[in-house]
Amino acid sequence: MLGRQTASGLYKLQTSFCFHSPRFMNRRVPSSKRYQPTEYEHAANCATHGLWILPSLVGGSVLYFLSADQWHRVAAWLYGGGLTGLFVTSTLFHTAAWKIGHLRRVEQRFHMCDRMAIYFFIAATYSPWLMLRELGPWACHMRWLIWVMACVGSMYVFFFHERFKLLELLGYVSMGTAPALVILSMVTCGGVRAGGRRGLVRGGVVFFKSDGLVPFAHAIWHLFVAAGAGVHYYAIWKYLYVPGPMLQTSR
Image (cartoon, rainbow, N blue to C red; front, top):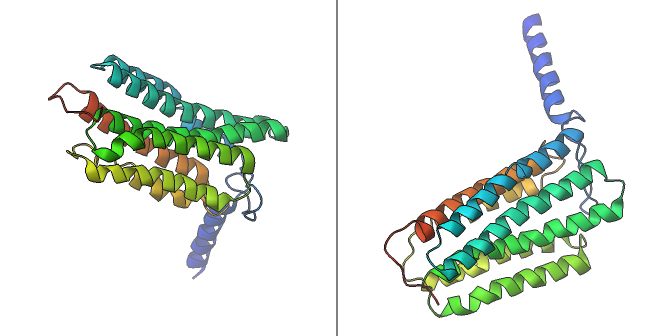
C-alpha cells in the first residue's frame, strides 16, 4: 500500500513539474493580452525557425539554378524569398521578444513584420503553381490577386495589429485556402496533393492558440509550419523543377 502511494505521489510530482513548472510554461492570459513565454520557450521559439534560415536559402538557390526559363527563375526567386523571409522575420521577432522585450515599441515593430511576412509567404508558396502550371481562366487573375491579398493583409496588420486576433487568424486561413480554388481548373493535378501542406499547418493551428495550456505550444506550431514548408518545397522541386516532360503553363 505504501509503495503504491509513493509511486502515485512521484507520478503527480513529475506531472506537476513537467507541465506546470514556471521554467516550461507560464499561466494562460486573457485573449486581450499577449502570452509571455518562459526563458525556455523563448529559446525554443527562436531555434525552431532560426535553424531553417540557411536551408531555405539553399533550397531557393537550388530551384533558381534548376530553372529552365525566366518564369521558373522568377517563381524560384519569389518562393525562395518568401520562405526565407518568413523564417528570418520570425526569428528576429522572437529574439527581440526574448532579449529586448522591455523595448515595447521595438518589439511591436518586429511583431508586425512577422505577421506581415506570413501573408507574403502564403502568396509566395502559391506563385510557382500559378506561374508554371496550366490552371485555366482562374489562374491569370489569381496570379496577381494573391499578392493583392497579401498587401491587404499587411495593411490590416499595420492599422489593426493585435486588436482582433481571431479575425487575423481567420484571414491567414482564408488566404491559404481561397487560392486553392484555381485547382478546380487545373489540367493536371500531379504534385498538388503532394504539396498540400495546408493539412499540416491547419493541424498546428491548435497549438498556435494553446499558449499557457501546452508547454512550448508556439514552438510546436513552428515545427508544423516548418514541416509543411518542407513538404511543399519537395513537391515544387519534384513536379515543377526536376527535368521531365514539359508542361504547358498558364502564361
